[in-house]
Image 1 (cartoon, rainbow, N blue to C red):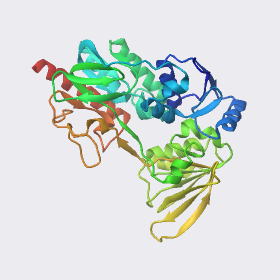
Image 2: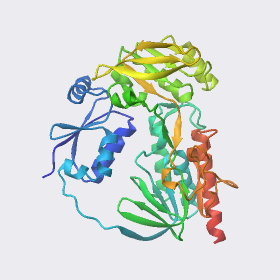
Image 3: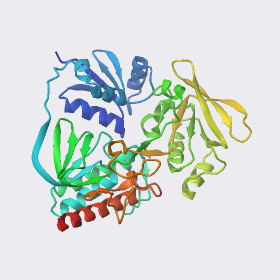
Image 4: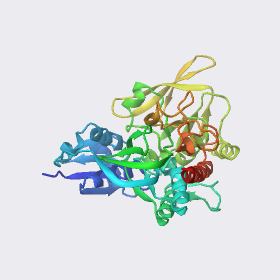
Length: 401
């Protein structure tokens, strides 16, 4: 018997979208409570789950977790039983179609590659990944992408990219690629229970947010610790929060949080920010933001139910101190999503894919674009440009065959 499923969500929350996509793919009907403007719903969610992050999912009244937790249950083969749906034994099937190009990953690079490949009359499949739309899905205002003089919301921009790719014939499927075989031709890519074949592959799996790696950080994730101010900032109205980081992402998080919090501390391990000049100026001029320099977070403090503060350490003096706050947002950079390609594809010491002569990897017919291979610029516009390059490189490669 199918269980009663409830999910609390919020506008522009990529994790909410991922969770709903997973439930929909399993054919599960759910009751959705959008708490963006629903104050009572916010209180209800926190009371039932004890958490300050979205989404939160309940099955038959029992809290089963957030987006990452239900995906982990699915990976372990346990989610179907939790949801009360019959798990059918599925055999690995192979798609009859041979694709000219399979693009692994969405975001500006993947969608742009799809637009160019499809317009070149290449039969194109895009495997979007569970983080559909990439990092821009957690970006509020995109002000530096040409063509949008008034700026645009990151999720809105990615929806436009997606529609444009579909307009030219790209087939887009949700979910992650879980296995890629590059030693045989055609190449083979597994997603879900289907194996697809391709004459060329473009890797655009992007990068994911880093965490500090503290046990206390994991203990209080969802209870005051977050990596997405856009998703969770509104839980901290009139409260004190802290942001760890010194780049554009950290400044954007801090500035967004000033809309809700009474005070925002920005903690940075150096005495100078890495953020762009305009973002530095905005942050320094905001009266709600205070900088804590030359400092790292040693431990997240809490009462077992919620964050109550941070234990800090000045890396120059070695002196420890405590900072009282109710929220902690981690914005210390990103790591490339390249685990799937370890072995066959060349990478640098931190995992970025190496490209040669444009976007080509060390395997002929396999190309890489966007943040998965760009450790320097990491901008939406450069990712989009490299997606264009990868599609053109793939087209020329296929012509040469």
